[in-house]
Length: 86
Image (cartoon, rainbow, N blue to C red; front, side, top):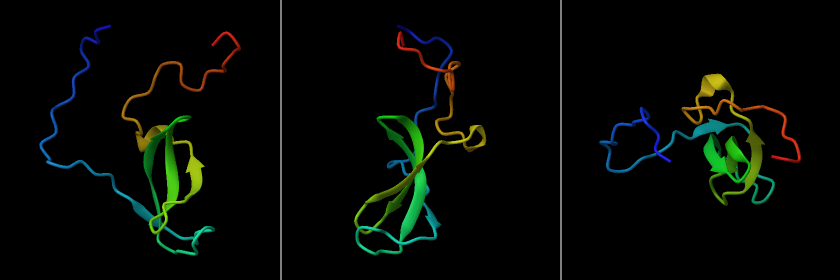
């Protein structure tokens, strides 16, 4: 399958990174207070995660909003009800 008209510029940075925003809270696993929120791709789709930066325990997952642009594209069928047929 060829996607025509979908082009992304080649990154110019040597390393790509994601902004990890500090949020209030305490880790239930290690007691750490350095909790960050950032976009991630999970087995259940794109999410925003809250993770402890000391032990990387997952504390919370959130659905991204359209305004947050994660991912930068949305499938037409996003938020459609799923049937057993798929």
